[in-house]
Image (cartoon, rainbow, N blue to C red):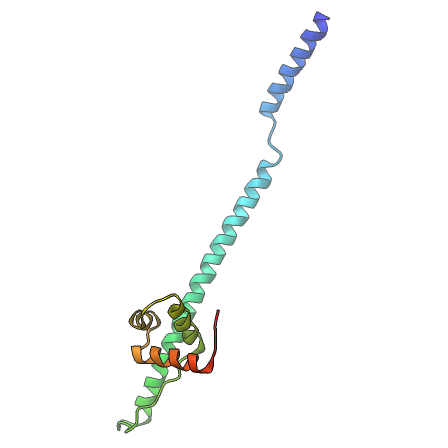
Length: 133
């Protein structure tokens, strides 16, 4: 009986020591998942950064192109100022900011529009009955 007990204790100690030195089979898998997650986060960051630059370029192009077209056509000033078309994305942004409770001046600053343009967008949208979520 004593021999059996001593044998079991010795085997348990050997197994315990063996378990300490054995490599965790899931450790490499966890490391790979962590690396993939980090790569995905980095790629998403780069994509968002590029998208932001493109959006800024599009907004800049829309504002600069009409000015360049007006200066290249004729140097004489036109008697009636032309109304520039406001993009739907900016209109949606104005509507969302308005629903968030921002004032017209704050919306104008954030959307790069004049206060009059913001008021026109808000009044035309309320007249049309358009609702954006």
